[in-house]
Image (cartoon, rainbow, N blue to C red):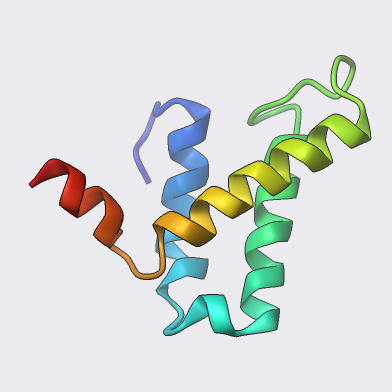
Length: 88
């Protein structure tokens, strides 16, 4: 994980190093759920991202779902074929 990286990169690095390494992660319910939980926990934590005194639970749930949908679409594998195509 990058030290001192902005929080979104900490989350992405955590997912890429842990959850998204599972072969066919999008097809496995337990792995998909683990990705969702990791995103939720990251967003809900005062230490890493959204301040709990400002964001309501519904706000965090919506943001977590938006992030999950992006990760699901953009990272069928690591590295992301989507971002490799954009860079190339």
